Every structure is written in C-alpha cells, then in structure tokens.
Amino acid sequence: MLNAGVLSVIMGTGNPDYDNDGKARAMPNYSWVSINDWTALRAGNHPGGFKLIQDAGDFAALATTATTPAKVAGIARSFDGTQAYRAGANPAGEAPFSVPRRADVPSLKTMALGALNVLDNDPDGLFLMIEGGGVDRAMHANNIGRVIEERMEFDEAVEAVSAYLDANTAGNNWSNTLVIVTGDHDHLLLGPASDTIPYQPLVDHGAGHVPGYKWQHTGHSNQLVPLYARGPGAALLRACANQQDTYTDRNGRSFGRGAYLDQTEIFTVMSGGRCS
Image 1 (cartoon, helix red, strand yellow):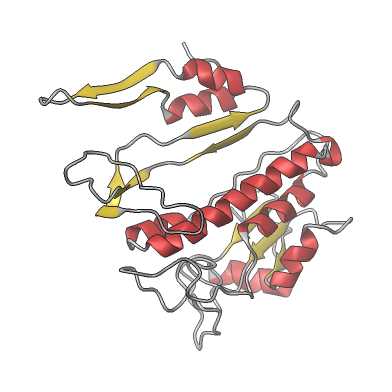
Image 2 (tube, one colour):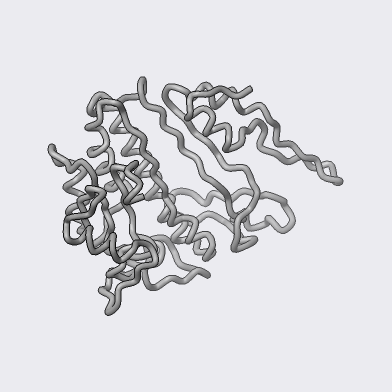
C-alpha cells in the first residue's frame, strides 16, 4: 500500500513501536510494516511521499485543517487495533465501556473525517473505504461489551460521513457520491433461546441495556449481512437483489431474509456495470 503509488491515505494501527495499550516496546515489532518503510516514514523521506502522523491530536487536526498534505499515513500509537485489544478484557461478562477507553488514539470518526479532508482536494472525486474491523475481533472473543462499543464507533463514522455529504462539503453531496454500508461476513451471535428457536435475533431490553444474547460459536457464520446504499447507483444495487433466501425445515418452520445480492455484484455496480 505504501509503495504501489495508488493510495493517498492509509490510516489505522500496526505501529511497530507500541503495544495494544500504547506502551512503548523495547524492541519494535515489524509484523505490519517493514523496517525500511517505517524508518523512512519516521524520517520524513518515504519514497511514496507519505507524511506520517501518530498522535491523536494530529489526527483531530487533520480533520479540520484548511491545508492538508498530499499523502498521509496515519499510524496510531497502537498495534492490533485502537480499542478492541486494550487490557482488561472479560469476554464472559464485560459490560460496554466498563473498561476505560483509550484517549490517546483517534476514533474511527476522526480518521474518516481526516481522510475525507485530504481526499476531497482531488477535482476528479474520491474513493474511500472505512472499515470498523474491531467488531470482528470482539466477536471472535465472544465479548459482547466490546462488540457494542465497536458497533457504536462505526455508526458514529457513518453519521459523520452522512453529515459531510449533507453539508455539501467541498462540493461532495448525495447527488454525486455513492455510500455503501455493509459487512463481509457475520458471526453466530444470536438470541438467548437460539438453541430451540433457530436464528432467534437478539432480544431488545431497551436503551442503555445489553440485549439478550447467546454466542453459538467463536468463528464466522454464513448468514446474510445487511447492505445499505444511498446516492447515485443505489437503485442499481437494489436491482441486483434478484435472489431469494428462503428455507422451510421439516417441522414446517420458515426461515430466510428474502431478496439478496452477492458481493461480486457490489463490485459490478461500483465498477460502472449492471447486473444481468
């Protein structure tokens, strides 16, 4: 990503100098970035032209500054993620926000707004992918508290992008920008009676309360995932949803989510094509 000459913004973690709690390592860990790339980034002379930022304050400033670098590598002072791996995890019963959140790393919302502020300088438009990857890590750990935290942080990023377009920022709005919100897989987080009620959804206990749930596995499921789209091209995605998810078991119970499309069709629309 740093050397292919394609990207203008790269943000996330993988900082070789820090662990998952932001503590400096005695020996750097170069699992995510090579020593040559990291040395050049820190020295400010990376051949890809990226400016390195690491401090939470620098991420916040990037989101509002009038003059931005042409290319930014925003590598927060953390390794595997910003919040999902912070110390104190208790998968069996950790309530959301019961373990203090780190304040020295940027939120997904801050990174999204910073990335947009760099990319919207291009008169040809922009492409931005924003991933809330921490929810996957929390679900593998069966930690409902951190799942909720990560989902809320992702929702805040979606809200920020929507507000950016509502305001016609840098000429970008819902008439010229397509936003797609989806996931690449699901997990087996189901309702508390899902042993006897197949695919029972979570039970809503009201605002401010953890829903009723049961983990059925620590891995991925093959359940369908939601897809939301707004902007030019959204209708093409709806037209691609020409397959039906339906199933009736031997007890006569019906299951299914109805119309769906597959992920290759999302790429087809994003590439300017149409579903057959």
